[in-house]
Image (tube, rainbow over all chains, first blue to last red; front, top):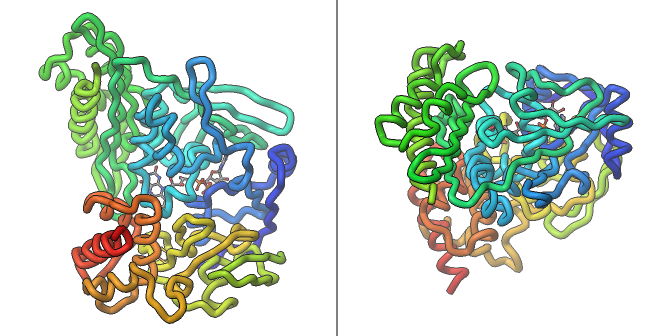
Length: 284
Length: 154
Ligand SMILES: Cc1cc2nc3c(=O)[nH]c(=O)nc-3n(C[C@H](O)[C@H](O)[C@H](O)COP(=O)(O)OP(=O)(O)OC[C@H]3O[C@@H](n4cnc5c(N)ncnc54)[C@H](O)[C@@H]3O)c2cc1C
Ligand code: FES
Ligand code: FES
């Protein structure tokens, strides 16, 4: 379990890090995905740039109705941030589901989404929250929607030389309710299927429904057909079940030794139902 | 690369290869064999140490990442010939059998109690999710953490 040799730099500033990454060095954040891959020699970067210690990437702040998270926030920080727990509890709840305490102490939100494991937890919440992702290079900065960031298994919109620098999520409106429900793979804790749901009620009707799904397919996605089916209904048990049944419709589902495609689709409907019922119970 | 670390209150400085894992540094370079290697794949928690106040799996970290940090291993808990309250509780409550998982279990338990001196049973189990024990069936470990909470809270 010894990785191939590599050079290691721990730069003091983000600009220095980006300059090295522009020359082909690979970012190391919490190491919770990269180091296991290096030990198995599935990854053999020649030069690691440690961005895990950069204070510039470690902040959670509110600005104009949105919450801005530096990519270097650990899962533990996201789980326990009073600001997030108060204003975007879905993200904190999702972080609490990741791995175990030791993994949450080290792993970062930026590293998780850049890695884009199809079974990672954050993508479900970020899809449901319609999050924006800020990508920075040595000379560039752009913002992409979560729906355009996750492209496929381990594939994202990141271009060579770019890093995820910030994640932007909305301040949840008063009265909205959200929940993340996951079927965890018992050994690793990764999501076999995970569903994040956000609902807002107005005048006895569901005014807004957002559903993000992870684990089911090669990439996380928003279940827009199910969202549409639910909006403007009263949100009865039958209406929620009917919407949940649409989540996996037409999806080319993953299949592995933990769950066949057919079973994953079944789980997606079951966990979508649970997430929607839990979200509804939390609406005011 | 040259690194400086403080381990259990003592300062160390060594030249290490960047690929040297922290667990190998602690066991083979510094000679602290309390942290164990169970799986070496980030799953069992036997290698858990405290780094800057956070419990981490030292098999999934490079020693160079710890440069400048303060580390506590199981060896650093007892003081002046007296066991730490959590060690005492593991002993009294039969929180160990073969003892292989124990250094990691105790460091993870310390993290739980440092962050929350009065955890519920559910919070204790959530905090121990990253640590595997093949012997005890966990109940006595959970009891030990509860007993340690009581002992330190009293
Ligand atoms: C035992 C165990 C259990 C786990 N269980 C779960 C789970 O239940 N759910 C879950 O979602 N995840 C789980 N994980 C994965 C964990 O969440 C990782 O922390 C995360 O996937 C990677 O984040 P990191 O900061 O550790 O990134 P690293 O491992 O440092 O990096 C991962 C990849 O992203 C790149 N990278 C890192 N930061 C950036 C950035 N800001 N911009 C661009 N690229 C970047 C790196 O170059 C590398 O390719 C688990 C991991 C372990 C070891
Ligand atoms: S040896 Fe580190 S987690 Fe098992
Ligand atoms: S006491 Fe034997 S593995 Fe836990």
